[in-house]
Image 1 (cartoon, one colour):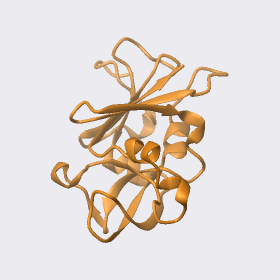
Image 2 (cartoon, rainbow, N blue to C red):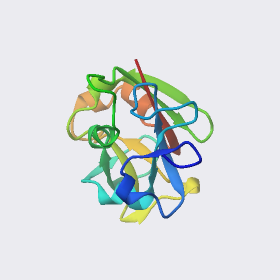
Image 3 (cartoon, rainbow, N blue to C red):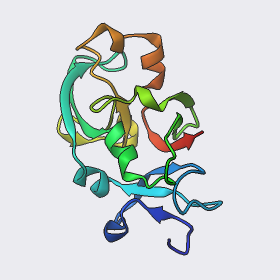
Length: 161
């Protein structure tokens, strides 16, 4: 725990760069009023990643996305023994937020993408983080429900009970 009240996802790998994502929730081990797990781009890039090609309803053409599976990211956050994430609230830079069931994050999808077409994404280009599904692979990823969960400019994930 640092003086700022932030619990780093991996104490040995405290962010050396700007924090781009926080994961908070009352079942996070060490959670205090202002505590949360914090991730820089470097920390996210050090985690196992997935890469896929897909089109989106917000961009033209097919793009390559690379990022951390949401399930892998959640596994990095230390939860109180026996606690299981039930609902997640994802919040974007513009305060757009959506709740969705945590169990719907399977082993691979969605990803928290940090690259589009082999480039880090800027805030102007829907980055630095974007929750992305492989929309072109299956019909289940092309629904209004999934589209609303595909938050760009992602800043925070709150683990709710």
